[in-house]
Amino acid sequence: MVDVQHWLSALPPGVVYLIVAGVIGVESMGVPLPGEIVLVSSALLAATGVVEPEWVASAAAFGAIVGDSVGYAVGRRGGRPLLARLGRRFPKHLGPAQLARAEQSFARHGVWAVFFGRFVALLRILAGPLAGALHVPYRRFLLANAAGGLVWAFGTTYLLYSVGKAAEHWLKDISWAGLVLAVLAGLGSTWWLRRRAHRVTSTDRAPGVEVASDGQSAAVASDVDPVPAGNEH
Image 1 (cartoon, rainbow, N blue to C red):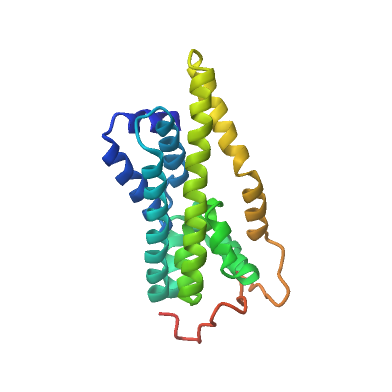
Image 2 (cartoon, helix red, strand yellow):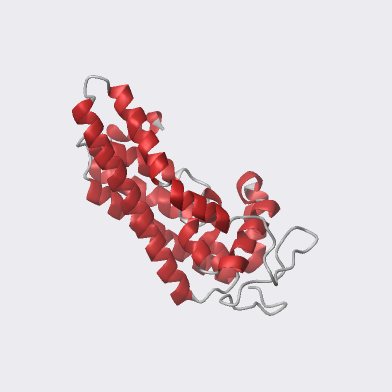
C-alpha cells in the first residue's frame, strides 16, 4: 500500500481522482482489482494535502455506484454462464466456491448483501454481476448499491483523512508512525461493518435454501426474482 501511495503522489490530483474512480469502477464490474487499497492510499494522500478528500470520496462513490450498475446490466444479460466464465478466468477470486458463498449471501439477505458487500472483497467484486444474473429488482439493487457505495467511500476517506491530519500534527517528525497509526485506525474504523458484513457471507445454510452438489445455491431470497429454466441469458 505504501508503494501505491508513493506512486499516486507523483501524479496530478485530477489523474488520481480518475484512477480512484476507474479502479473501483472496474472492480465493481466483476474484475478483481485492489480498489480498497487505492482508496485508502488516496485518503492518506489527502491528509498530506496532495489531493482533496471530498474529490477522493466522490470519485470512489461514483466508481462504486456506476461500476456496480454496469456489472448488474452485464450480469442480467449474461446470466450464470457469464459468472462461470469469470470463475474460470479468475479461479482464485471468483471460483465455484466463492460464487456459491456469494449467491448464498443473496439468498439469505437479499439486497442487504449488496450494501454490506461493499465492505467485503468477495461481494464487492461479485455484487453487481450476481444481482443481475439473479434478477434482483434494479430499484432495490440501486438503493442498496448507492447507500453502500456512499457510506464506504465517504466513511473510509474522511476517517483516514482526519486521523492522518491528527497524526501529521502530533507525529510530523515520525512520519512512519503517523502512517501506521492511520492504517490501524482505518482498519479499526470498519471493524463493526466488516463483522456485520462477514455474517452476510457466512457459509451457514439458510432456511429454505438448498445447496446443489456442485456447491452452488439452488434457491434465492424472496426479493430475488427467480430465473426460469433455459432463460438465463
